[in-house]
Image (cartoon, rainbow, N blue to C red; front, side, top):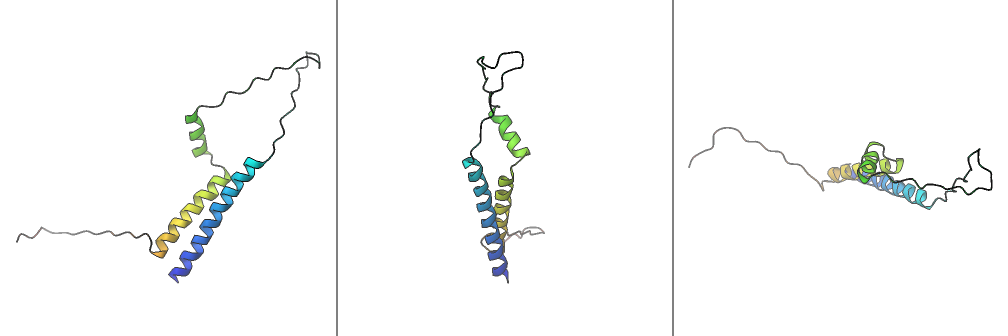
Length: 108
């Protein structure tokens, strides 16, 4: 029974990780259409429009934002990894051993 549980949990973990990575790849391959540049109302439609490129946020701010607001793909991968670790524990690949001893040490 223990083997069945570990296999089922491992398969579900792998499927979650693959689904999350597929979402990331699909988002990267999606074609986004750029928004058309609309001139301000007070200028003529034939005037050149200067579009200022937005400055990227600092790396620290992007990392903090990624941790605070993970994408659905990141959540799938995270839960898949958790299930894989649980499967390894259920299969016995990872074990924990806690021990304690009490009393005074014996002197030979």
